[in-house]
Image 1 (spheres, rainbow, N blue to C red):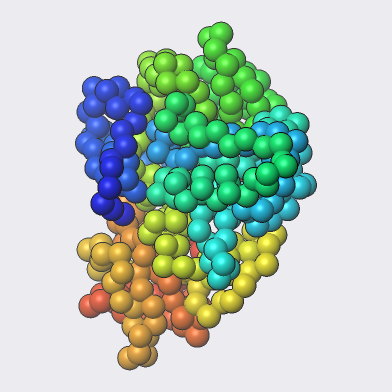
Image 2: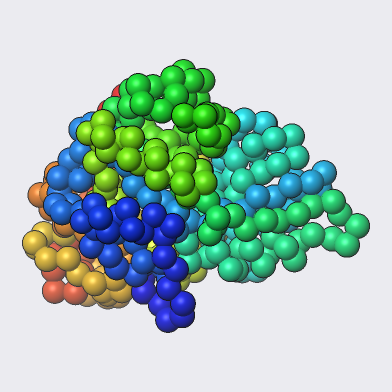
Length: 348
């Protein structure tokens, strides 16, 4: 997930460093991998609540009377059905129908939309959005990635934490995939009820100084920070793909099993992004070949050691002939089996 080029730093880097963060470069951003014990951070996320810095994700504000037309040009899905105060997940597709970005689109006003995308796709998606503006259109695309922060809060206790320490209107008025402008200690921010950890959660877009105040407030209330390692384990347990490393090889929505979820045409489906349970204790590298019945069957992408399952789990791109639960495969030298998604299901 590391790539050559400039490395961007989070606005709250000093706060994370003071909290004991160990940093690594992921998709061009230096991000906290852990603050101590990643297993304890994951346990807090699954059992109570944890917060994390999502500011490496791109954030574009698309405004104007033709903002919707711009979004319809770039993203697949029923963007025109998005009502004010609602959010939706969408994908940007390339000429061959493969996924080029995973995005969350929130309609924050009548002609204003926030587009949050994958960290490594910032430049490409920004260029596509701006190129989609016709000469006579009233639309502006403003990159807010480096001037704002995006703080996540997730876990079965996230709603209670938001109610007690941030703003009581957040859990009361925000259903899943809704957005709301709110005030935190007199400062305005945007909240979206969403999470890609397999748990209930929120994302807060705030000015950096306000984001630091929010993090410090929640830490004082006993809510821990979680790093990228814990988030990746949670994401893979919930079988939620990331562009890097799961989709970058060029998958269609059907192959990523996102077509029905997003209500879009799936395209070709000769392979499937499948859940894989490995027998060994090790964590094979991204790109490890998968074999089935003595023949090549695909390759492993995201792979983590899940402490809650006491097993190595992953997402693999597998030929559709072999992508069914119960199919025994090899991941390099390790025995593995294709299983039903997800590994972890949120408690209702």
